[in-house]
Amino acid sequence: MSDVLISSSQELGNGQISTSSKQQEQDEIDAQEGLALLLGGLSACDISSVEECVTKEEEEDQHKRHQQSPLSTSNKLTSEEYDVSIPRIHGTRMDASSFALKQNSPDAALIRQCYERAFSLSPSGRLSEPPVRIVDMSHYNRGYASFATRDIRRGEVIYTERAAEACQMPYRCSICDESRSAGRDMFMYRVRGCQYCFRSLEPASSIVCKDAAGADIPMAEYWPVPEYQSDPPSATSNSGEQYDLDTKTGRVQCMHCQSLFCSKQCLDNLCKSMGSCCHGANAIKVAVHAASCAKETSEDDGESILAEPAITLAARMFSAELYRYRRCSDGKTPPSPFLGMCGDSTDIDSLELGILQHENNQGVPTYSLEGIYASLCSELSLNDEEMIAFPLSSFERLSSVAARNGFNITTQSPFRAYYSGMTRANGGRNSDRHKHSVKKLARALGSPDGELKRDMDREVEEKCAVQIAALFTLTARINHSCDPCAELRGGEFVDCHVDLVARRGIEAGEEITISYLNLGKTAGRAATDGNRRRRELKARYLFDCDCCRCTEK
Image 1 (cartoon, rainbow, N blue to C red):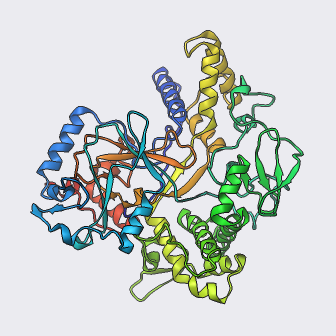
Image 2 (cartoon, rainbow, N blue to C red; image 1 turned 120 degrees about the vertical axis):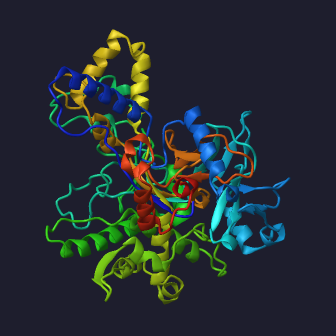
Image 3 (spheres, rainbow, N blue to C red; image 1 turned 60 degrees about the vertical axis):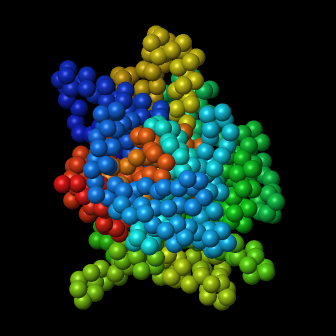
């Protein structure tokens, strides 16, 4: 995917609830559908390319549109062995020698990195390389693209990929917030989560409505996250820093930056990639503070405005890049996993990243990341040599890469495991015991009459599901189409993994595409209005869409 920060949210219900019986029936259906979505792990639009399964009629219509498009021949590669990719552009077969990457070229090494965190699972259960070939289409003014190396069935998981970098989205500036409770875990975040695998670490008590005095969720023993202990013993990690370790649950919390981990293994894995959990956490903290304070002083209402998700993710990327540079004493820094992704320091104004400065003579606003960059350099103690190696332009590029290639994702809620366990223990959804448990659950969630209400799925998700921004190196090489043949799914989001799933049959040599926008049935005019789609893609991802759906008469 060459251009993306997918960021959208969706509520299943809004507005006033009618007292009519017909409206009440619809509200009950909406509540049940909302609960079903919540049990699926992700809301329908947490990954905006997620859509409902394509019917056979829709698949035939897609194939027909694809074949009729004058650009359809540009979406296929022909090669007997797929050792060399030979594209067919506008019906013309290109010379393979001008297209193939040399094995020892820098580009070949860069592309090999993209496959390090992705795998495909065969029907027999064997792990293999994803059936995807990354192709440099710069000769045809397209950048990178991804093509299928074999026929892929509809509904097949093409590959599973782990994020190269990710960070949890803060909901307030911890430096500015003087009224925060002392010792509050993860006070910078709304939901407590592991800062490596980003699993939710919210206990059952976190979803109980404050107005439901004395109410508890039924059968809380099936909630996968145990309650917190008041005084956990302390332990010291291999890095020499002091941590709090809960010996009963295995959770670890840093006493300095308050970072929380589901296990010692997650803490050690993060330290391997970043040196210390404090480096990444404090980088995010000062970046949010620099952006919030600068924006707050420029706003009339005086409310704190947090940094864009791209800047927050870029701060963690900057910290990881700096650690890679510092640990190489021989001067041979390993290649960055973010190389080759679209995004440049000159994109800051177009993407509206950073602090608004002023308008130029043409009335075009300009933006700056200089204040945020200075805060990062101070917090991470960059010396003169490192300042030369990591100038302002490097952070601007990382921010642009995060904005054009990242995803906003809501991780799987622990509510799913809880509800499934409760249902099994009660003897099924239709049992009287289960219906009684659901009524008790609804009261704990704030419904006095014991009935599920609209928006309860969203409210539960906000309380116990972790929101992150993530970057996937292989998925970043998949281009957009308003008529995509694949989609990203995160319903089983575990340890920062997502699945790329075929929406229809994909032939060997066909380009694999996803949608950077929400094109589902709930998208409204955003899905059907081609001009609106193209305007949004141009504003958010800086390219003009020429897919078959946008170019058809």
